[in-house]
Structures are given as C-alpha cells and as structure tokens.
Amino acid sequence: MLGNDVRLSQVFVNLLGNASQAITGPTANNEIRVVARTDERGWAVVEIHDTGPGMPPEVVARVFDRFFTTKPAGIGSGLGLSICREIVAWMGGELVVTSEVGRAIGRTLEDSHEVTLVDDGETAIERINRGEEFDLVLCDMMMPGMTGMDLYEELAQRRPTLARRMVFMTGGAFTPRAAEFLATVRNPTIAKPFTAIVLRASLHAHLAAQDELPNHSA
Image 1 (spheres, rainbow, N blue to C red):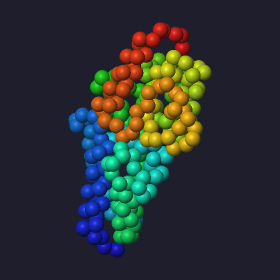
Image 2: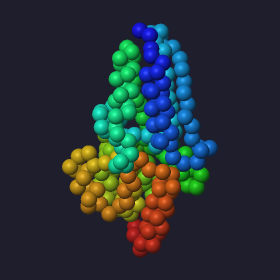
Image 3: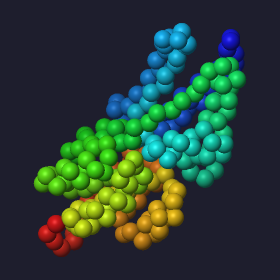
Image 4: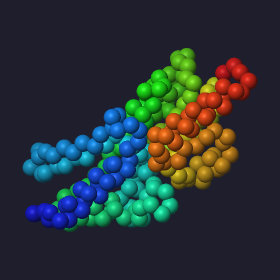
C-alpha cells in the first residue's frame, strides 16, 4: 500500500513535537534522533528516539488512548498519538512505543551529582543490602515488580533514614493504593512531566531539609 505524504507529515510533526516536549535538561545533554531503515519483511521502519525522562509501564500502556495525556491541564488534548496511530494503521502500518524510565534523568543530574541507575526496586534493595550508601533515592511510583510504594515500605523497615530520603516521581495516582500513599507519605513528590529546573530544585530542597534533621542510625 502506498503512503500519503500529507498524512505522514502530520504523523512526524506530532511525534517530533512530543519528543521535543519530553526533553529536559541542558541542550548539550539531549538529542532527538530519527533512524530510517528497511526490516527483514521489507517494511519501511522509521524510529524516533529522544532523551526524555521516559514513561513508566502504566503510562506506556495508555499513550494511544484517546484523551489520555500526562501534560498539565489545558495543554494538549490527548488526541495526537491516537490519531497518529490511526493514520499509520490506515496505510497498513503500525505505530508502537517503547520507553525506559530514568536514563535521561541520570544525564541531567550527573553533572552535579554522583548518580547510580538501577532498573527496578529489587536491584536497589540488593545494592543497599550490600552496604552501598546513598544521600537520596529518586524513585518512580509505578515500576515493574516492586513499586515505589513497596520499595519505601521495605526501606522503612530496614533503612528508615534512607526511606525518609526518598523522592517520588509520578504521572498520577492510578490506583486507590497509590492515591492513599501519596496522600499520607511525607516524602516529596514530583509530578511528571517536569523540567530539569524543577527536578534539581526539588532534590536540592529535600537534601537540605534532611541535612537539618537530627542524625539517626539507619
């Protein structure tokens, strides 16, 4: 099936716009990369990569839903990606998304902090149990396997001082448990999407507040 250049232009403008809006931090630390190739089936494949902060699985699962958006109220209709997917499907293709949370955040912070990245809560617990020390834990609320809530509860039992040094990132409270947790926990929460300025300011404020507290053994 032949494509339609006008409709494909609409798709690429939308996807590149979303990629640019996702990026945080200094320009030198970020990029949007477009890769075109032909796969083993002979299909044309165009990949758009960006160094934004990434999306947790529960957001990835809904990005093509009509009216779903992680942008602040009044910004974005939540229709862009669903329309793009419909256009591509109409031409016999498919539009898919993959995302990895945290990689761009690491690049944003590593110029002023020593940053350790892990892919899941279980790995974080293993490293902490081995005796590794951290001044702060920046954690997504929703992760595969162990959630940010589970990690907090585990640290509250084993390393309460470190549990108090957690900062949560969230795209919204998608479950009753998450809503109750965010309403009661005293740790700071950063709403996604956020800018590098907001991220750095939030972490700096939390570190400063923790340094002012009496020192307790973990």
